[in-house]
Image 1 (cartoon, one colour):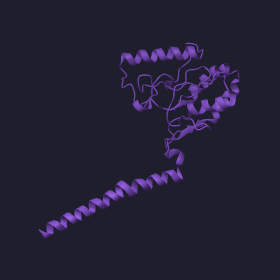
Image 2 (cartoon, rainbow, N blue to C red):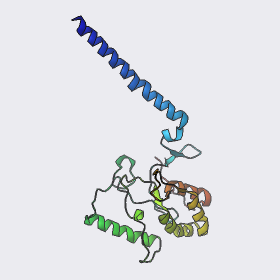
Image 3 (cartoon, rainbow, N blue to C red):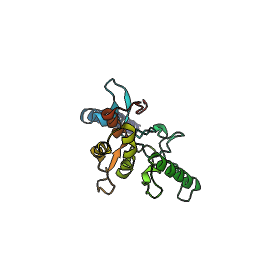
Length: 207
């Protein structure tokens, strides 16, 4: 009987100790470490206006429809897309007729929006969704094509807009650097608004 009680006491003490360490001390240490050394990343890489309004996160794509903005890649996250609570892809396979027609429609819209001839190749990221539906990046080729439209809509020389594109060019997070450089659409559009001030600012809905 005494040995059973000893075993129970030892098991109880181990359970309490591990609970305090794993469910208390460790999470608090990780939280403190993140807040002290990486406060922006630990709090979601939020983009905050001087008045304290949260405009989005560097990690999450948002929809931009106006001609004065660079447009992100399509999204299947939620019924309207770009829904951070419904992250995911369309789950349509390469033989899907629905996917085929969706991409054809996006190609036509992309050509019309950017005044492209039918012979111009369209970047894949301009007409396909990402696996998460929230990818904030587009390819350099996609941004270069859109720069004509954005420059016209803002009444600025194209070379000024292209300078901003180059300033926002990011290397891939892939450690082997196999993926090409990319541009964060939300950051680029915020810089555009700050630099050129469109007549009707419509940047980024509040979270």
